[in-house]
Image (cartoon, rainbow, N blue to C red; front, side):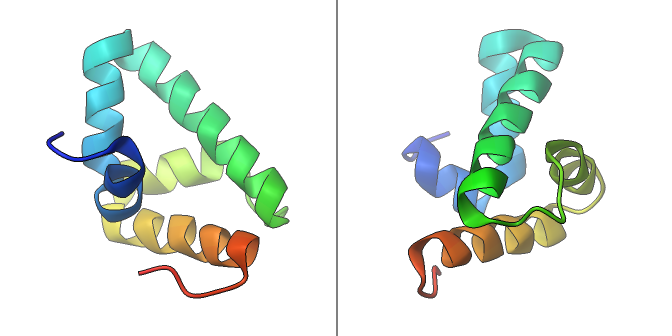
Length: 82
C-alpha cells in the first residue's frame, strides 16, 4: 500500500481492500472489510447503512464509497475529515 492502513482506508478504500485480499484472500478480505465497516456504522450511528451496502458500493464506485466512509468518520469525530 505504501502508507498506513488508516490513510489508505480513507483515501483509497479499494487499494485498502486489495491489500486485505492479498493478505487474507478474496473471501477473507470481504469479511474483514465488512467487519470494519460494521463497527464504523455502529460507532457513527449510521444505521441506515449495512456493511454489505458499503462493500457493494466499493465494488461499484470507489469515490462514492470513500464519501460514505468519510461521512461516517465525520459523524464519529464530530468534525470534517479530509
